[in-house]
Length: 172
Image (tube, rainbow, N blue to C red; front, side, top):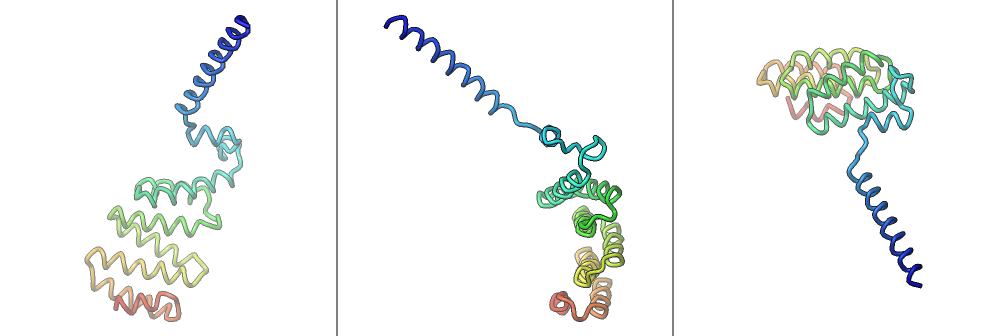
């Protein structure tokens, strides 16, 4: 019995020591996004992975940076995304987030260029109206109230039946 107890005690110490080491190793080691992508086989197009998965991840990262108010990062990622995926179904959303990020970075003229491009290329009238109203907002929050007023009037003229009409009436 004495030998059996010692064996169990030794095995228990060995087991618990190993389990603790494993727990410490797992708790102390968090995989990076790149490591998780590699382990899933989603390396992105440059590494031979699935380009749709890579694009989806980039799109989510752009949203994440924007929501965390990391506007410079959102702008850089949006530029990369749009250059690699100009025809993607969510390219217009990315362009809009980029324009809003540029506004937050006090780069209003660049933002207005993006918003004009969005208005010119998107087919959905509500998105066109929102982009046009955002151009007016960029003037308004930049302190150029006369330009904002003119922009809002133009938006109201072009998109009188849009969901933006109440917002525009309040602005005018």
